[in-house]
Amino acid sequence: MRQFERFSSDTSVSFSVFQNRFSGQGTLKNISLSGGFIESRQITPPNTWINIKICHDGIGTIQTAARSLREDQRGFSIHFAWTDRTALSSLRDFLSSLGTSSDDPGEISTGFPKEDASLDGPIDSLIRKTWASFVRNASGSLLNTMISWCHSAFFSEAEETENPEETFYQGNSQAISEVYRKIRIFAPTSLPVLLMGETGTGKEVFSRTIHHYGAQKEGPFIPVNCGAIPETLAESLLFGHEKGSFTGAVAQQKGYFESASDGTLFLDEIGDLPLPLQVKLLRVLQERAFNRIGSHTQIPLTCRIVTATNKDLKEEVRKGTFRQDLFYRLEGVAISIPPLRERTDDLLPLAHFLVQKISRKMGLIAKALSPEAERLIQSCPWKGNVRELGNALHRAVIVSRHIEILPEDLGVGSPSSGKDPSGSLRERRDRHEKEILSACLLRHGGNVGKVADELGISRPSVYNMLKKYTLELPTL
Image (cartoon, rainbow, N blue to C red; front, top):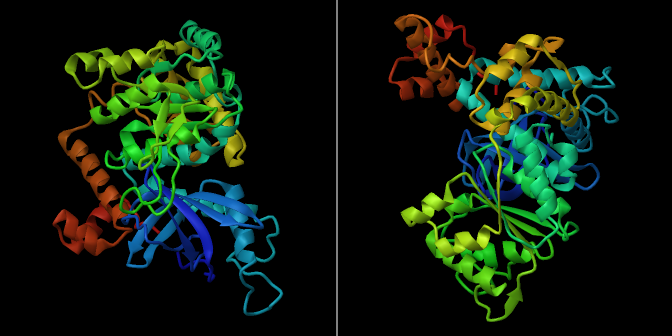
């Protein structure tokens, strides 16, 4: 992080943790092109992937991925993981406004060569250098998690405001055509819709499509992950609260139901909603009204309710973990989203569409898929469905160094590799040992002493393993 000049700053930032509803705000200080320090009462633990939004009146919002490093009582330091060259250019412009070089007060110094006006070379170099460290040193699962995080961080906000039909490949298979036929029929009505499908099939995208075709499409679309709501805060988050209604309620707060007024409230993972909240939700749906905590004033329910689950709710009803009366309330229209393995005709067109979309969002030239990559895509089971495919293609767009995307860029093995790993016992053990060492190095930021302590070996042994597996210490 010290390879670029630092600047003192008091800039407002917001941050959120990958696959978690936790978020916070703070002040970004001591900033450079590669990282900085966030002063905040909400502290994220070291080695946590977060989404950073830097707010600047002149430049606007600068968004990127980051990994938290050291923490103290004031806040925590971060290391940027740049994937978007436009955002990186915006940060460079922001740093340019903070200071000048000591040699010439009229010259801006941000660690880039003065003669490179376009900055294309240095920006691409920094992006590639950042990702090269992760590609070399991270285990496959950790790298895929990072790619997944970046995919959601860079696309979720943009897709909230765009026409879902323009940002999501609909497909031509009979199975997916039936889904869209039902959506066009029932979306204009007020019936609640229950979307059922495996993880990663795109249930939220289809819920946005329902909102787009609905009578209240001009209103807000509010997505809520029921499985991520803390049970102690759930009632306040859903229904809102009045000032002073409980300890910590320092101001009146609207809940999700009120925020979605005259729009659509999307309750994802509804099968994970605790039973006490199921009772309260049922009452709201029956009476079409709710109260904020600490208030006796009823607020009419004016939003459309769309729910989704990857569970068999009928089976959950039989097991007693989901209320039967709530199930009937939510199942006004039930739509099953087919998994990707049942949409083989859509697989390659979807892959080409996603490559174009990802490249456009990242400001990169879209590459074609090589014939070998296409065959690998068609042969994979894609148990994670569209999300898994999108993450693999996002990875490929970032790490590809050739004129085409090759099979190794996708970061997925052949369908049989997971069932029957090849090689002798020693070769399999070495692969596993390398993956453990790589993950440990990344987790400790290349601190050999901490790596040795965690693995219960000596420092010389760590260096010997680095040499054996041709690994490099992360340059974070």
